[in-house]
Image (cartoon, rainbow, N blue to C red; front, side):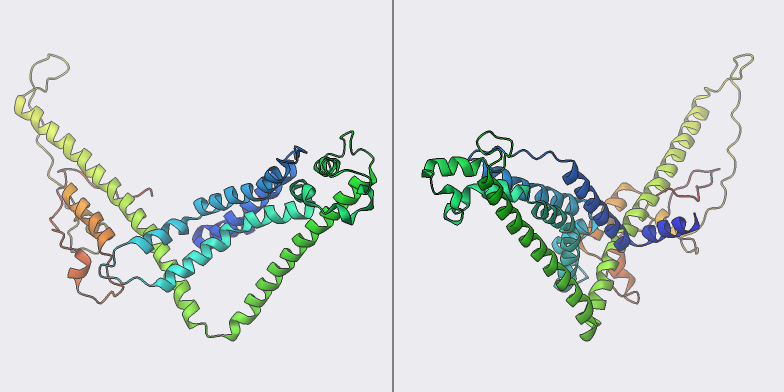
Length: 347
C-alpha cells in the first residue's frame, strides 16, 4: 500500500506525470476499442476504399482531439500564445516547447490505433482490394475486366459465395495483408529508432536552452494553477464575509424595528447588545490571507482579474510593487463584528 500511495502522490505532485498517465490510459483504451470493434467491409467497389480508409484514419483523428482535450497544457499553451504582453514578454521558444509536448502526448493513442490496424490488415485489405493489379495473379487470366473488379471487391468477404474457397481470393488477401504488416512494422521501427536517437543524442548537445524552456513551460502551468486555486480561496473567504455581513445587518435591522419577542409572553424583548468585535489580522501581518482580504469589493475583484489577463506581472520579485498591483485600491476589508473568519480552505 505504501508503494501505491507514493506513486499516487508522485502523480499528484507532477503535472507532467499526470499527462503521461492520461496518455497511457488513452493508449490502453485504444487497444481495448480496437479489439472489441466488429469490422464488416461492405465489399462494394465504390465503398470499400471509403470504409477502409475511414476506419484507418477517422478514429485516430477522434483520439487525437481527445488527447488535446485531456491535456491541460494545450489550453495553457493557447492562453500563453494569445495573451497580451503587458509587463512580461512572450517567448516563442516556450510556446514551441509546450506545443511539441502537447502534440507528442496527443499523438500516442492515434499512432497505436493506426499501427494496430496496419498490423491486423483488415482495414488495408478492405480499402485497397479493388486497386490490386490483376496481372500479378494468374487466376484472373480467364475473367473479363468487369468480373475482375467484382471479384476484387469481394476479396474482404471470405464468406461470400463468389469468392468462397477461392485460391485467388486467398492470394490477393495474403498479398495485401503482408503489405499492410510491412508498412506497420516499418513505421514502428522508425518510431523506435527516432526515439532512441533523440534520447541518446540529446546529451551530446548544449542543454541550457532545453532546461530553460522546460523550466518556464512548467512555471506557466503551475502559475496558472496556483492563480486558480488562490481565486477559489478568495471566493470562499469573500462569500463567507458577505454572508456574515448580511446576518449582521439583518440583526441591526431587527434591533431598530424592535421585532424580537420572547417565546413566553410574546412581548417585545430588548436585544442583547452586540458583542465586541474580535481583533482581525491587519494587512501588514504575516498571514497570507491578509492579501486576499485586501480585495473586498466586486470592482476590485474585476480589476484584479482584468489586470491578471491583460498585464501579467514581471518575472522579477525585486521589481517595483507598482508593477504588481496594477493600480488596485487596497482598502481595508469590512469584517462582521463578533465573528472570526474561517482559516481553512477547500480548493
